[in-house]
Image (tube, rainbow, N blue to C red; front, side, top):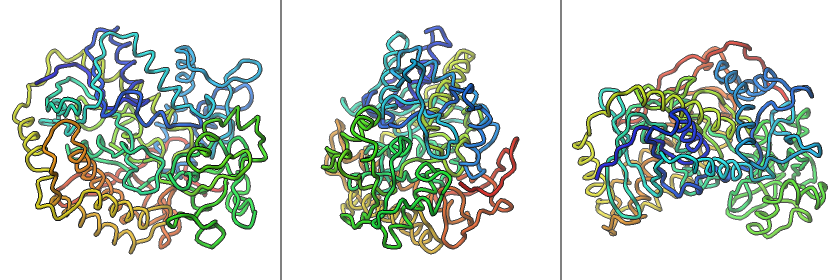
Length: 570
């Protein structure tokens, strides 16, 4: 089977849906657009975004685009490309109003204007929110808007195994329909990669089980460089034990972080911001408190601190944080109206991703990337909360428009690379999972998670990362010995687990190799053996290019157009 479309959107989260809507609008519903997703469209991880979407909505009260840009650049520890940040802060308010016009139920002030709450690292209340289910409502609004367009085809529960490129030009995607077992080519003129993050190589994470970095890993192996992958954000408040996200909005609404001595310990680490300091600072503070014995003993070594909301009162918790209350009751068996919530840092977000320019274009002709899968260098070494959903909307729109205009300018599709498809099918169903059976894929994934949790988390050092790199490469070899007994092509979750593990291992190798080379502490990359930021030697982006032996690292400069780096204090 072969499917033919003009614009392909790989991924159905916020960035993917926004790109699809924009492509349909730009082409006046005349382009043939396809959304390909490994899940049902409304089950993308974007529905888990809770706290808010950052934008300057009330300049008359003192906020400004310049202030949002400064907060973002300072929050990035001066690794963000400043022209990219400028574009972002200018475009994000337009997206808030666009969603408003499409019907999203933004939380409102008493006078009816759009409400906003404080978020970490922002010097103004600019996190636009819909209760504490912001991503859920944004996804619903985009999905509903999608229904207006007849030109969009959806491939749900289709797992794409490779991106086909010939002579630097996009050719198509190879997809495995999990429901039917069919393996087929999807041809197109243009592609937007919007497949999200990959934090499932860590054991304690806020991310859905499907966040295995498939798009990033495929792009990497297809020749697109990955940028700044050593910078992995740890969210300060993952619920102990399951790791479910407790939104930063809980602290933005006035929640306290408390150690086992009853102290609001953030006063020692960020006295001017307290609990609403940037995430890298709060995560390091919590980890320090736990390591120095001021945490609470948790299950399976998951020691924690308390997030205390009790003083906010039942009315405010029920109005502003209803999902957080529901999650705490259902998964931790506590009611935050009456008891503090046990939390600790959890792997949450990739600042790095597929290397793109300011328009989301990759080095491959006809391919763009948007959202967490992409790295346009907006977040640098540390992302501010509420900037990610805004980024998905802004670059979803930009890449959707760029891909549509490119496709409209192409007279014909590239030739069908049938030989490449046949080779991919043989590889997937003839080689992967056809080892001697001496290894188990789930044991390998567990070892990977333990290694990354222990050796490449909030605090890092050279020997730990060297040990991690050795282990990751060992796992890379061992996965070839996994044997999958199930030979069915329909919902073969065992083969799927092997594919996911291969992707996670490849990305983990890039994270650790990049972190080992970067001999400084900057943002989320905090080394015990190199504790200072080094702008002279490391004020640059890491580019990792695929080779069979492991990533080859190159570097490109940071684009500084407004502010020179200064000491970062809060």
